[in-house]
Amino acid sequence: MDSSHDSEKHSSGDLHSRLKTRKLLGVGETDDGDVHRSKLSQILGHSDQLYIRLPPGLRIWQIVMAIIMSTMALWAFIFPQHLFTTMYGGEFENTLPIRLYGVSLVCLSLMYWYTVNTVDKDMIRLLLLCSISFFTLHTIVSALCLPFVTTLCALPLLFLCVRLVCICVSVYFYWVFTRDWKSSSKEHWRLYKQQ
Image 1 (tube, one colour):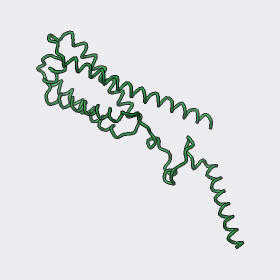
Image 2: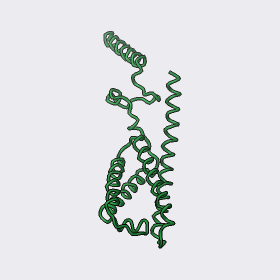
Image 3: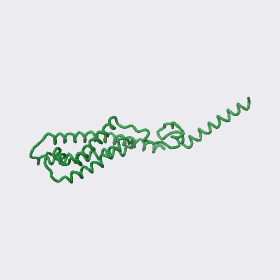
């Protein structure tokens, strides 16, 4: 009976010693105080990608943007004259520049499809910035071409409005990501200064 009591005492002493060693080494908790869920996550370390929270509606917006870019790319590549007539309300005989525009849109749409499943905030933020730049420049060029159009159709104005909506939604999500990034970096800096 005495030996079993000694083994329990020895075992609890080992446990206490292990906990004290882990605390001394800083093993067992993440930087923000969370406890590791398993030995595997403790060994592999803390990954922000596992705990990331995306803004509501962002995935849907990424899919919508991928579809818009893919549609525009195929339209410019397969039907270049129709795209130019519809978007800008004019006639254009040389289709090579419009087809090259379609090729560049194919590359951009592949990036959009790639980011639909990613949780990397920097990649998503970069692609949102690219879409803001693309649609803003596209809108500026379209608005500058509107006074030179002889027949004003409703479709170029409709596409102009669609681009403005794309700009606004992308700016919103970019703002949300930038705000979250700034607040989380301030929190990390505060934790770093406390150590």
